[in-house]
Amino acid sequence: MDLGGDTVDAAIAHFNRRGGTISTTIQYFPDYLSDRRAYPIDPGIPLTAGSFSVRGLPGAFSDCAPDRWGKNLVTKRLAAEAREQGRRPATVTDIDLLVGVADATRQGALRFREVEGDAFLHSDASIPPLVDLPRLLRAADRVTFGPQPRSSDLAAIKELLAAGTGTLGGARPKASVRDGNRLLIAKFPHRDDTVDVMAWECTALDLAERAGIEVPPHRIARIDGRTVLLLDRFDRHPSTGQRVGYISAMTLTEHTDGDTADYLDLAAALSVTGQQPKDDLVALWRRMAFSVAIHNTDDHLRNHGFLHFRNGWTLAPLFDVNPDPDPHSQRVTGISGARAADDEIDALMTSAAEFGLAPDQAAAILAEVFTATRDWRSIATANGISGSQIAVFESAFEQLRDEVALAIVKGGPGSPG
Image (tube, rainbow, N blue to C red; front, side):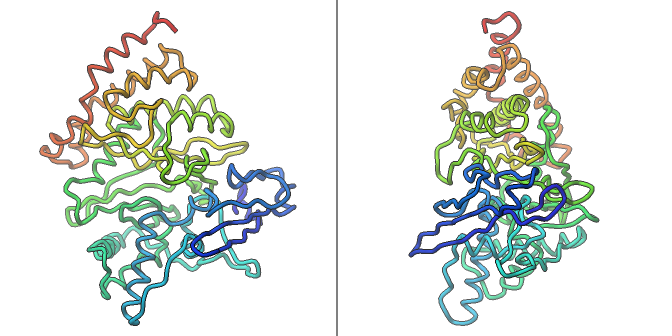
């Protein structure tokens, strides 16, 4: 792994397959344990001698392995190759996905090589420059044409994988690109999109920044009238490119995919493992308020992340945030048990104490967030979103404003604490 600018051997991992079950055994190297900069690569694997066994992959390994988009690419590649060769495609395991992606674009600070090898696995990726965006978008369009890959898709799939795209998280089509020495993510529209999803995500990030929330540097590119969202990688140092340790909220809370989760779980984990828990708890509550303000419901635990600095984990910049135009959609991660829009403001204010906030402090943050999102129409228009789409999304931004105004009055100065 990369540690303070140095590449060090942190641990040895053995993967075991028995039938359809995978387990992982990990042991830290003595030199890593004695390094004053060392930290647990996963909250569930303490920094002590001896071996640790976990079912499946450790959460930190899953965080730097392909998510749905990368899995889709690898699976389609194997299916297309099998079709060309007249055979059944091989079964792809999580181990295959973990070790089969590009080293240069792997998320976070973890890197992998074989026990007897010197080179990192798949260290030959060539990250394309920004000028290749049109070509990459065309390749992504071919890959997303349908669930069954055509033989002609294979070249596009290989092109995206060779560029280090398979390591990127999330479900939407995307690619790694470089702008000089900076590593970026290019998020593409899906050919089946009925709204300008990437422009709406850019709008959400713009509004979040106005609301006092840290977001990655981002901008829009237009290719043949379509919107591509470009985001700087926040797990790379902006000037040196040095890797920064990263884990998802799912790993921090030791949850797994499919678990029911609540922001209170995240607050509890952050209080124990955070580098600056007091500040981050307040920042997390502000993000919760922002998600409520724009009706961002796809807030699962992989859509929150943490970076490692010095003595602990701290909140990563906000990412993968989008308004949901359906007022009846329920959020994935509960707010003190609340998932429906009608219950969220009360739950926010009730839970504020768990995040170190007095009622008047919570009311002040809520006011700041909802004031910052008041100009959502003008921001959306500036990002090229049509008036008809703005009308469709109005409920996402406006449905709770009256309730918020009442909560701000109740929680203002002089309210009972």
